[in-house]
Length: 155
Image 1 (cartoon, rainbow, N blue to C red):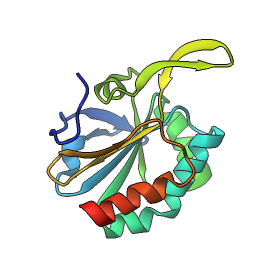
Image 2: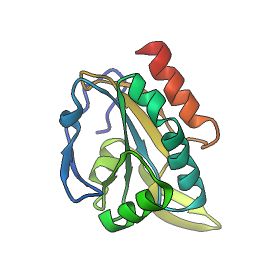
Image 3: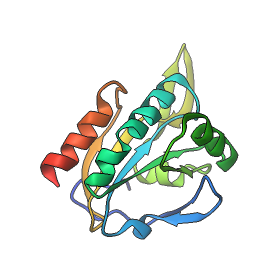
């Protein structure tokens, strides 16, 4: 069963880019911008990560933390963070457990091939752990501003 807007998000634990275990509940008292992306250091994912990076202080000013999630390894995440100077954590979801919890691990089609993968999506979770907004099948351009404006105006 996937999480729904208005429901408390079931706590989860993933490893971050440092190899530390991170739980969603570690961020209780902060808004969480949980964004799922397909792959480190690919064009769309890099643009999105850099947009979050460039707006990191604005999110921080609103008491929001940014967490990126993909199936990539911690080593891949570390290289991606170092290469693009990302000031937020990336979480490792190699088994796609959290991606499935949020319903973003789906059948994709590209150039006539079908495969399972992450559908780019962002979820805004409030300070009490309740899902307040979901952005599914995200188009990268302008998306970070949408997420920032939602927190600024609605939370």
